[in-house]
Image (cartoon, rainbow, N blue to C red):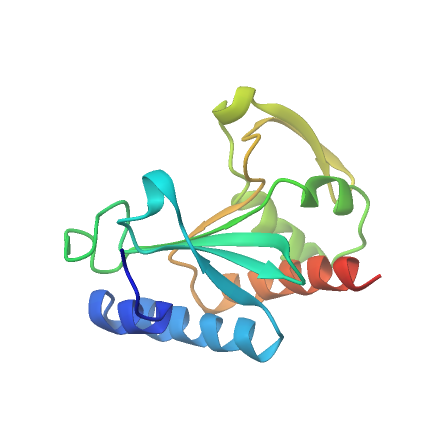
Length: 160
């Protein structure tokens, strides 16, 4: 079982811009009271963490693609998935056009869990993965700003 911090694995397995952005995102999440919980079962030997706030899921982070620890076949690989509950939260949430555009580009289309119809920012999409709504692979600086906005919206929803 992996026992080191997520940041340890980010530093070990990622390089360049991917490492910088992943570390920045991890610091942002920690500074805002979110915690990382190691994956279990299938995910136990991978660099995978659930991101939670006040015990509720906000998303999931996988470092180094789908490889196990030490599998450096994707040195630039990290992914953030949102949890699927946010689709209802984001149905008609007001958001600027550029942030919506980035979010729409990262909808997790597929039939995982059956695929569902979701309404996001006033627009319907199908089939969206029934486990996650958004999937951000190696987000750049602009995309990371969108991810942070989505996390902030979910965090504020949990605080209510």
